[in-house]
Amino acid sequence: MPDTPHRATITAELTHNALLRVTGDDAAAFLHGQFTNDVEALPVDAAQWSGWLTAKGRMLASFLLVRRAEDFLLMLPTEIVEPVAKRLRMFVLRSKVKIEDVTAAHVRFGVAGEAARPAIASFFESVPEPMRVTRRDDAICVALEAERFVVFAPVAMADRVREALTQGGAAAGAEAWEAANIRAGVPTIVAATQEAFVPQMVNYELIGGVSFKKGCYPGQEIVARMHYRGGLKRRMALAHFAAGEAPKPGDALFSTAFGEQAAGEIANVAAVPEGGFDALVVAQLESLATNDLHWKSLDGPAVELKPLPYDVPK
Image (cartoon, rainbow, N blue to C red; front, side, top):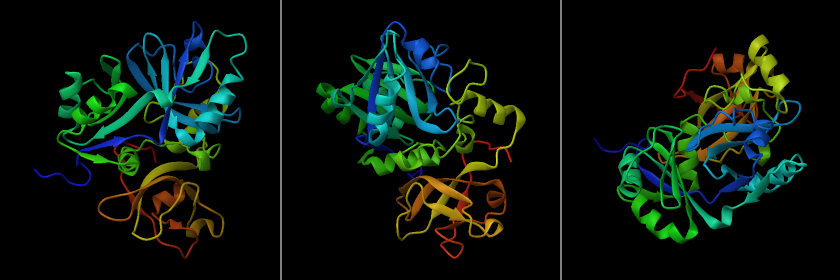
C-alpha cells in the first residue's frame, strides 16, 4: 500500500527543540514538586509528557521528560528554553540539583510514519514500547506512539544516526514533524501561548501529562478543582485551515454564539503536504459542538474540525 501524506515516513532534525539536563541527588524530588506529572514514579528508561505551571494553573511549558539512570532530559521548544531554565533554577535553593542546557552537545531527530519502526530497529536493534527508551552507545530513542519516535545523540554520532534513520523515509524539516505532532493531538506550549491554558484545555490529562494522585506542585489546586468539580469551558480540537495565509499560534477564533468576543485561539499550526495547514485549536465547547469557528473574525475563513486520535469528553 503506498504511503499517504498522513503515514509517509519522515525523519526530521528537531533543531527547533532544545534539551535541558537535570542532575543531582535531589533531582527527582525537585522535579516532582514542580511538574504536573508523577516524576518520582517514572521508571528509569521511561518517558512521560509533563508540564510546568504558574501558581494560577496556567501552562508555562509542556515537554517530553525522559528519565535515565544518571539524569533527566527535557525536550521543549528552543524559543522558551532559556526563560524556562532560568525560572526553574530560581526554585532550586539548597536542593542538590543542577539544570543545564545541553542542546549544543546533542542532535535531535523525530521519526514518524509506517516505516519508522524498521528505521529505528536498523540502528538501535530493538524498538521500544510507547513512552519507553532504548539505547545504543550514547544515543537514546524514545517511542511516543507506535509509529513516532524521538532520538537524542551526541553530535559526534550525528552522521551515523542520520544515515540509519533516513533509510526508507524522506529527510524532512521541523514543519513536517510539527504536523505529525499536531495530528497526534500533542500540544506544545510556545512563546505566544505561555500562560494561555490550564492543562485540561489542551487535553493534557488525556495524553497522560497530568497525575491527579501526586502531591502538590505549582497550580495543582486549580487543576485538581477543575478535574473533580468540573467547570472546564474550553477544549482542544484538531482543525484544518485551507491554503492561503498561514495561521499563527495565539491567533483568535470566533463563532456566532460569542459574537465579537473571541471563542478560542490557535495553539499550534503546521503546513501539510496535501495543502493548507493543520492546527490544534482551543475553543469554547459550544463552538466545537456546533462546528462554528472562524479565523480572525466572524466573517473570516471557516475552520474545518477533524477527529483527534483519542477520545475527548463532550
